[in-house]
Length: 479
Ligand SMILES: Cc1ncc(COP(=O)(O)O)c(C=O)c1O
Image: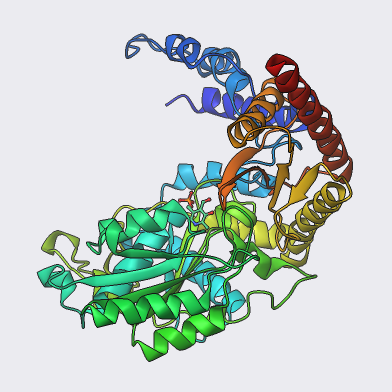
């Protein structure tokens, strides 16, 4: 180990990252090269000859950085990956150096204590009492999987852990769910066909009347409801289901209530919109992703559980090779008997450091700024008769539709894709498209500490101009 080389390269890397963060607004956000070009660029054999870190840095400058999607660019308003807060970036560097493995207490004692504290902070934000527990995970997908596994085990009287699923079980969720929930019901053996996807109302919240109907129909067929899944912040639009009604139904059916707040959990930091996730504390388990709207670098998801004992009941297996011979007093918290993962990254460090460095109020201001961006964009859209906005934004997600009444449905869909692709290729903005209630939408979602109001104005002007231009092209080609 050449500590001098490490020190020199490390200092340069930090300078490099600081320059990168400062200069990124001037770079193209996305470089629209062909994928084949990139696969070729990395078409290399396993290197054998040692190379200096300085040299490797130069290669990264040539081959990696120019083709990244720069989520630190203020124009990034796309799939929910935040601009990571700088204190969190430094924390990841330290976490890698310490390489604490939170699977077992003995490979990360202080890190275990920090992880438990951060989980407690998240539980406090939800409003869970002292009985609550949880785990930090790789993200919303894993947390939803764990939530569904807890639901399955609870609702089968803790037989499914041992026997698998023997009967016909069903789970219920809004049609606006994230796909991770379909994968989760599959993974825990409930099966995708047994996930009832319930239509939403005009605010994109699950329809309680239809949910009740679906449950009655299933019960009449002899099926057993095991889990009701609520959404507190849909991926498309940030819509929030009526969590209190979902809780009442779950109580009545004696089944688990899991709430997916992977994105919407960020609202718990908001200074302006406190209490908007009313009823979240009633859920048996909740998914929140600090690597979304807490602006933590990937990865940091969380599964929070109202009764921490359920984690051990679902995951408490203790093989001989993991016995901790120093655990005489039984005071060491072992994540491996309270979670799915064995080796487990030290995820809490960046969250702990971010809260200490910025403070909760400041992080709440970032959230409120993004909500203000969304509301402003919505306002611009409803002032223009050419556009439709799906709903008044509650969170930072806006879905806009360009009406173009003279185009066919298919042309309209292609228009949305073509405009999005053109904007991506220019590198000033990046956002996604989606389909809701049969219509295609631009899905714009700033989860970004660098976005300012003028970026929103500029984006909307660009949308107006390009949508008009595309319509003209379609009509000219039709003639
Ligand atoms: C509501 C919701 N749940 C779950 C997920 C999956 O989270 P992850 O990508 O962290 O696995 C997402 C991702 O956007 C989401 O929006």
